Image (cartoon, rainbow, N blue to C red; front, side, top):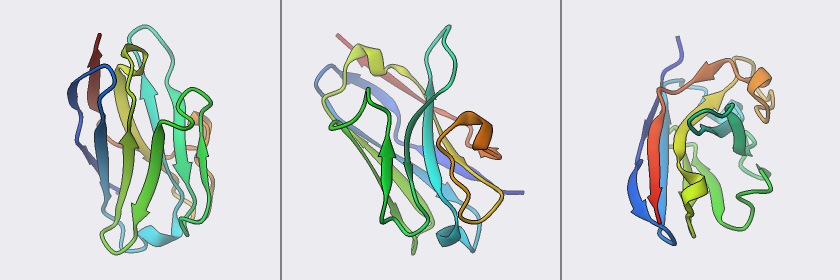
Length: 125
């Protein structure tokens, strides 16, 4: 069973920054695309960002483009989400996500086979 352990959430003022981390338990981490999704109260879970297995390509939701950066360190089995210029609309539980199949994309909820436990991000105005 794949374990995804997130950390780094918290409370931040509008305009501030946070960095989320997600540690993956697989020895073959470097073969898997990784993604971040978020879910705000009363809303559906939505795609935020994804990074290919090699780290060469990244993908972002329009709402976070230019403010968030996804990256990965394959030597540490970890994917990161650097969030800047945060607004109250970014308040949500953020989930790390991945697939069971190597090289499979995780840019929609239907693509995801494994989810992290979620980490709360709250942005105050």
